[in-house]
Length: 65
Image 1 (cartoon, helix red, strand yellow):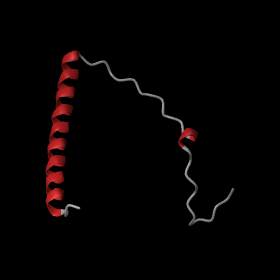
Image 2: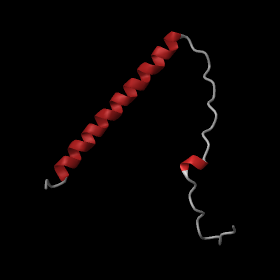
Image 3: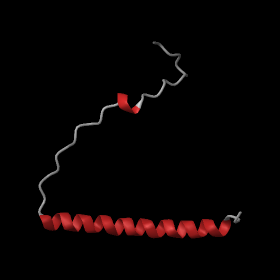
C-alpha cells in the first residue's frame, strides 16, 4: 500500500515488532560490579531527591481541590 508523503504510516502493533537479541556483557570482577551498582544507586537517590523537591514545589503552586 502506498501512502501520500504527508500522511504518517499506521503504527505497528507491539507483537509485530521483535525484540533485539541481547548483547553479552563483558566479564567483570565482583568488586567492579559492586562499584557500578553503588554509583547507580547514588544516582537514583539523587534523582529521587530532585523529584521530591519538584513534588513539593508543585504542591505549593497548585490549589487543592
